[in-house]
Length: 110
Image (cartoon, rainbow, N blue to C red; front, side, top):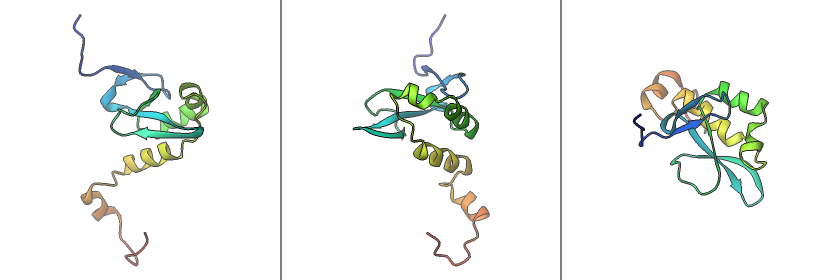
């Protein structure tokens, strides 16, 4: 009966499986009447949090089950979460991946 104090378990609002905090994204509602769901990268923003595996499957499940609105007091705008998850699956911030997968045509897309 030993507790893993450093890894509290959280339940993914998509697949309903439990996972440790480090493998789940913490989501909070944008607040002040905004219906946007915001990814809490450092997991310490104020307010009620919901937890989601950073996978497109869990995201789709959560949307289908309307889990965002239930978990986050009506916040349903998942654009930020979708961006974060699609970006995360492509590992945007690793220069190696970028160098091998992105061939800039003109060099000035963004």
